Length: 193
Ligand SMILES: [Zn+2]
Ligand SMILES: [Zn+2]
Image (cartoon, rainbow, N blue to C red; front, side):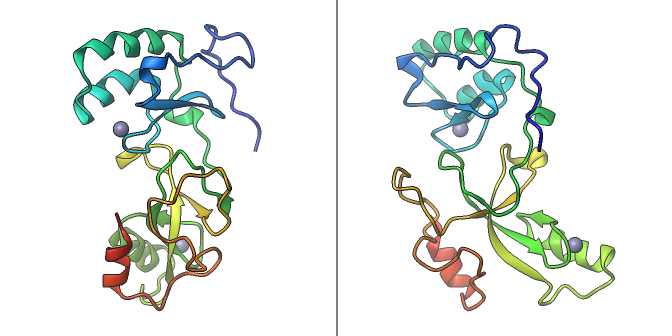
């Protein structure tokens, strides 16, 4: 996959990372790839720079005295759009800053959704098949959540020693290339934090 081109990142010298002020370090981190993409440390979702202020005000109700720091940071960030955030290849190692999501993938194609109903409908419609047994439960990640989510399958079985503990609770269960078909719905539910 070719690197995304940031035609709007005139604020940044080529290759330079925007600087995150000390005051904001408990709240977010900035990625190098895609360059300058903020990831919220409170909910582990990427946030488009233009939505940063709204996200932290509405989702996390950050204190008023911190808000000016967000405002000045945003002015130094590239104006990323969802199209500037290419999905990682399926099977990539999970990015440690992003939340790992329990999702479902069609066995016939790379169609992945968090809602199993969407996957079932997809199998019925696109493959003219019954859904039963034709999808896998997989760990996935997405830059953005909600309507703009684009999922890719991740490997969580080989954690980087520098990684923080997995918040999802699937480590050590041999989940890498295998799907936990033996797991009951309760086990899956209980494993979620
Ligand atoms: Zn958040
Ligand atoms: Zn499919």
